[in-house]
Image (cartoon, rainbow, N blue to C red):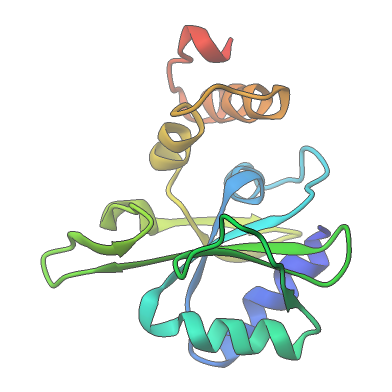
Length: 162
């Protein structure tokens, strides 16, 4: 997944009045302000009420829904080739900010901003991205992401990610 692909989707959603939040490895790079590694996909968070429209935008950009047995209405992948896929994480909150549907994104996790190729994007906040990245057994790329976030933002690295 190239930076240009990420920005194309971010811009298309913004033009349609939709907000998506960059998550995952691209979020780490956005928070750091530079691409630190290649990415096989893009993870995004989207509100439930905007998810169908985001899917339409992706379809219009040539993406197709992947048929995977683990797909749900709140977590699915759309691709337009082996190196260009988007993992869509759908959520919803009530008026008090409590998660009422889908992926568990606390309301304050959706307050980050970062840059990709010098362009500002909405993303998961640095403290929450660090929390999310340290919540599961790490692959080597996850260790590198955690170490980079810790170095930039002063987070303490858990033993599992050193």
